[in-house]
Image (tube, rainbow, N blue to C red; front, side, top):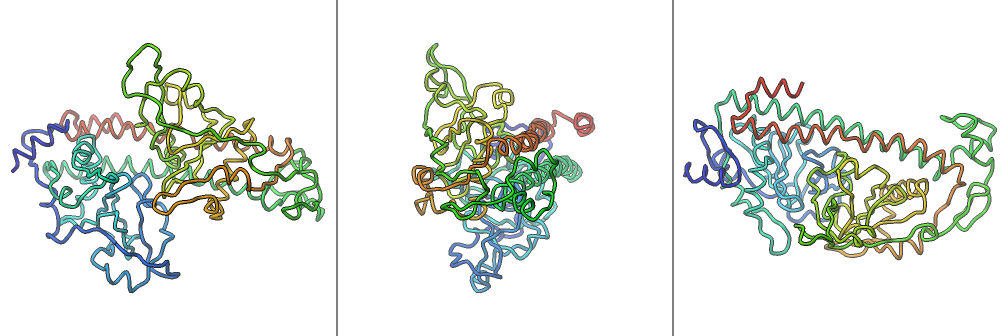
Length: 461
């Protein structure tokens, strides 16, 4: 068995020292019943109930916030086998199969959904190491090889249990886990910082363009908070009636489609260059726009070879907003295209299926639309424009034709753009991506024995 597992690991591109043991994953489980899928039938949402972790709650190997969907205690009791104790490892079975989450004590009492497997190990200290192995290049290759792709990519429990897991001596496992955890902690901190920055941008948008706080302050004879006199002067000191009710005097109301148009994506491009007319571009096919915003940029975004004319029609620039048009988790999520994608990726960037482009005329309006749609997602209003049950789809025609918005003055928009650009520049930082790339470069070399821990620590420093 061991020799066969080693062959599978090597065939997947992995290498390990000869003195390392290699075992099937099931050998690490507490017992045969220590791997199971989560809640199959969650039932109606129950206020005050038990948090249910869905695949969409998992962001880059963590569950950053407490899940919003709550199941009843009765439903939870039916699936008490998978109720978390705080020392498990979770593995996604659909969506991005094979993504792992090390369960924390704060998650004790929660329950995963059926699209997630919960594993209890004989030695819970192995969880970080096992996550590192499964998310390595060789681990991902092995998982991809056993996926069921009949309807959607799905990972089965029986295949998880047979995955080959290299096992060095305990001291090496501890050291590898420590390095991996150090990277994860740094990347998580950067993502949390990004989340805070985005919350600041959204709070400012809501204050200025939804609650109209500066206008209300001036009506009451107060200086608007958090802005200088020049910025405060850009806001009127009163309201006027409109079809949306009271809006700042001089600001107009119109349909979103009056200053946005849509360009749809598609499956343009080839995996290889077949003739001289094809040029390379990064495709946002299948890339979660939220992860682009949270991590910086997707290092694994695929290069496609496209016809120059097709590419030119679907390039992205700072006057545009990309919006996920399909999918249960990302549908309706947006990404302002103002970052210098070509500088970050080294190639032009195009968008393809499941993503549509809103052309907004200028960058100030594009930033405004990005924040407006984020506000609509926060309030769940966006779901008025999403159809479908199994696979939600955004009805962009309905959105543009019927969504009425208050369009501020050009001067107020420009002031918001100046502030938002500073925030966006930090959101689109490559720092987290650089750390992720360094992690994914060093850990396989550590696993293979090609790099010793002191050398890795020096490189990290």
